[in-house]
Image (cartoon, rainbow, N blue to C red):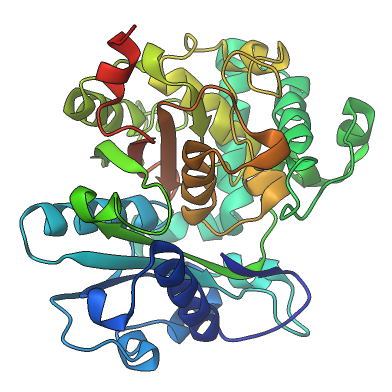
Length: 385
């Protein structure tokens, strides 16, 4: 990963190039080894900086796979899935997957990048007529619905922010590393009620890239490989009509079933989770949707300390989007790889045989997940003496 700053403006394509070159060096690859490139587009204003021309900038030649992928917040895991399938079927050998973003520009707050009107026609434009601009407003409505149905409290969202901050305090690359108390959380300004300042992601300029390649070759590379055990996507296509509640049910369960069936694992086998948490409510709902707790119990589960340092199910161990940094789906994926490699330093989790990474996009319209492990067969590893 490169960049990770809120102060220095710069084009996203430069950051993307640096990230891909760093990933190649980490994997012990040179330019001739890489025959695939997937560029993940951001939803921010800087997305125009990235495209197919990145191949030329990187001086990559004779690619077998070149693609720009935009799946909202699920782009990264979708790209990893696409790369893995290409490698499995012989369409490519080594595929670089990169995400870069540079929403922090001189004289323009990040809110201007992420609060744009995407569509003003038909049903899609009704939210803007109602004053629902940016992601915080629609996710605030979802959080409020959970509160009304299940009795979830503001303090439960605060627990998400606080435990995530506790992890970030052990991550040198996290943007926010000062301790956060419940009193400070509750005193913070509203962004969109019931979501406060610390319920929202921390945008940065930066880039992260990974290399997806054949497992046999990976075992001989510069570092121990991380294996992909399974992946899945879920796109419910829920119409914006009365009687449907995407606020309480995303595509997570659909993606979960595909990924865990592919891996031959169950939810109980997961050691830690890296959850897409652009807003605190997303962590709570995802834990419920995957079955780590029952519907309506996510807030109490998090407040118990289960997801924080020393808890039974570590979640967002690098600080996530809330306290770490917001590079969309690459934030949880990068931390998942770091933990699976055992390279997380002070925040390293003792058990990291199975790592769940999730991506979320739109207004719970899109979901994707991938299961990672330092072992090629995590189930066999668990069953061994």
